[in-house]
Length: 110
Length: 123
Image (cartoon, rainbow over all chains, first blue to last red; front, side, top):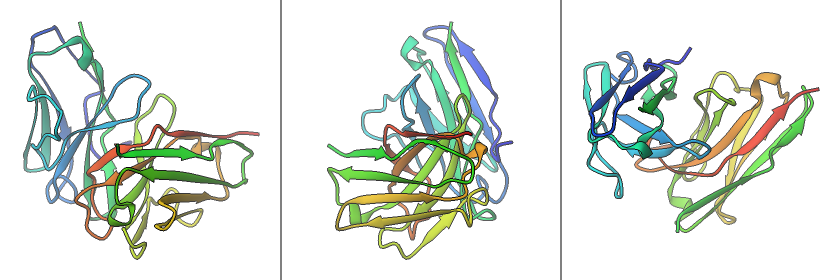
């Protein structure tokens, strides 16, 4: 079982807005920033959002992140077929003294 | 271009050992903390170990503590993972990842990741 909890799947149609949640605790999300990773089929993960809501250069502004208390969310607006991927949240855990990941959410574009 | 290339994966019997390497290029390797993260086939991501830029700070996941050893050679721009007493549950793709904005090895901003190397533990 992953320390951070994500829904196993999400879906949407092209152009739609979808959100993916990530739930943690006071030792991880509650006290540290959240990062999101996108893993396209057959490739390595790629940093999508860092420090809760910052986008690395090259990441479209269709992707946005937010955090409140011990939960975080990733929102994807104007959904495109190329967004079909696995998405993971991650945060440092002060109790475990290391990073923890969510179990991943498989996004399907219908 | 910032690049990380892992090597050293393969098939090993339970109880055996393997040493993974990660060759870095395109950035000042000695300025960054580095990490190993693994992914079981068809499953999610699991952090394995991290090491600070100088090697002074090292962290391990409980699942590998006492069996795996992370190290680095800044002169060779290389990161290593010595894996001993391997178990079937260690079977995974192992990625090395650079940690940006990490302090003393602590952080989760992994960018970029290597392409991964597959470790299979089976008799």
